[in-house]
Length: 206
Image (cartoon, rainbow, N blue to C red; front, side):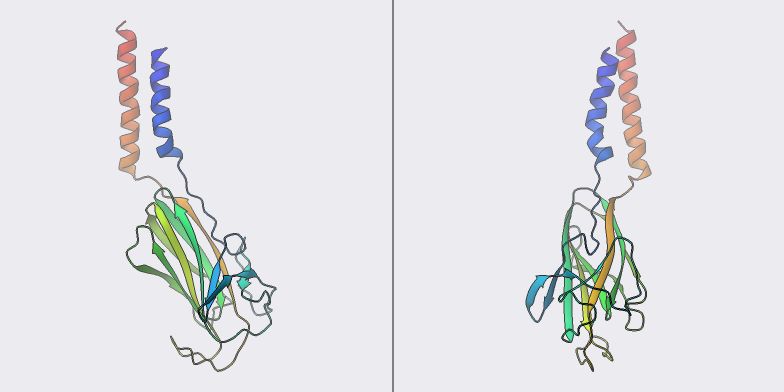
């Protein structure tokens, strides 16, 4: 009977290590995104469709500051961001599209400074989803940021927009606990076998 108790006790101890999971949905339309423009910050809202926004990401919706995909928005830089917390080593992956060009960044947690995750161009910003990822993120609070420029004919990195137009962001992203390294799994398995062996010896020595 003590054999069963010993195995059960070890399982209880090991369970948090095995079962701990961080599955955070960071998709627009699910996660809350703030957007900053001209030093004013508001909550991004779901937007109606624009005929030119042909990029599609399952589970995600286009967001912007106006709720309209056809109304013109002021030219300039829009900074969209969402914050999330991880409790275990995790991987982040996703894709995004934007009107117009944008760059994705990740900061906080185990990252020193800010990591650039991906960028699109004015030619494909709202017609093609751009992939991004960040692996082996340690526990902590992170901020996923998209720096978006509105306007057409924009020089790279400048705000000298030629004309106004609609603006929007589409993000599909999530986190998942990183797969334990083989050495960690071997150590865990060896520990379990060792506990079983000790318990069996104690059982049969009586």
